[in-house]
Image (cartoon, rainbow, N blue to C red; front, side):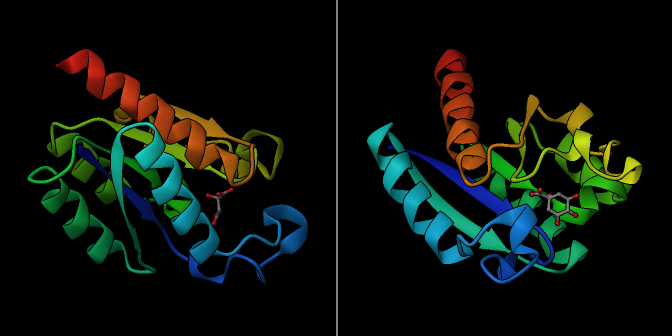
Length: 147
Ligand code: DQA
């Protein structure tokens, strides 16, 4: 089975208790286990990784090219600020799909701009935890087409 990685950025470890009116009550562990199950059902073995540290996320992106057919990434706040994460994504030649729980385009103006989306295949946002499911489906399609 092809392997896919889900990378979760800063503060997403607090999902379930963090700003529940925006992000809901689903925890990161809930998302991880649901996505492993969903991935297997569409032919993807899913690993998950969360970090609050920009450098650790960059190291994980670099290492991903050896193991994974692609990555679903929620860079969280780094979406809006990180040239370094953008450059890391651009440096590895596997597909990335950017996802967000909330619809970043309807929120504060500083969230409207993504530093990372231009080096991703596309962006899915606003569907809560289902954004990850849609992201994995998109990644599977891209990986299958590449074969
Ligand atoms: C987020 C949106 C970002 O603007 C925010 O900084 C997050 C979560 C989302 O999933 O909706 O931490 O990426």
